[in-house]
Image (tube, rainbow, N blue to C red; front, side, top):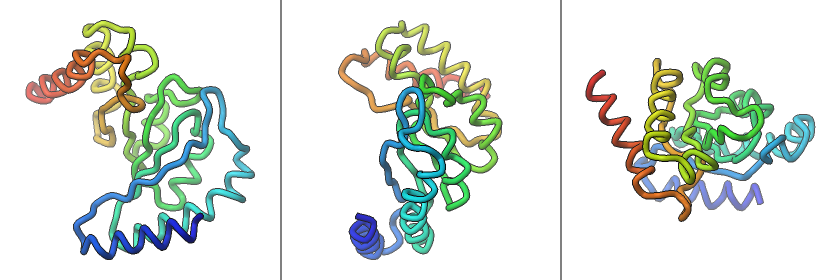
Length: 178
């Protein structure tokens, strides 16, 4: 599979003639409560293959954005060591994925993508709940950069459109005051 992805990705990068900025790749390495595999097995079986993909992207001048849902905090230092630029998503309800702690520990090395809770706040909260969560993220995580503010996972049909709009309206409002 790694050979296939390296070959097809390399062809796409070449065909794009320098018009790409980010290589987005992903697989889910975490559950809600823990990683799927041990850090030792991740380093042995997954990391060397990811490194080949990351190296290919970097050789084309691309940033690397890695998708992995769930509790993946244990893998973040390893991902950074092979060239990770953006972690997607920050699933805040998964164990160990506290956004403030991630920003503190890794924010100078990577950008965090996500963090507005798609498991509770967005599907079940009011627009005021969403606004408060966005304001908290902007206050606690945005200073110094390194946050792409959006849902902690994809937006699903159980999320009211007004809650999604509230994320961006609130961020734009605060950004204009700053």
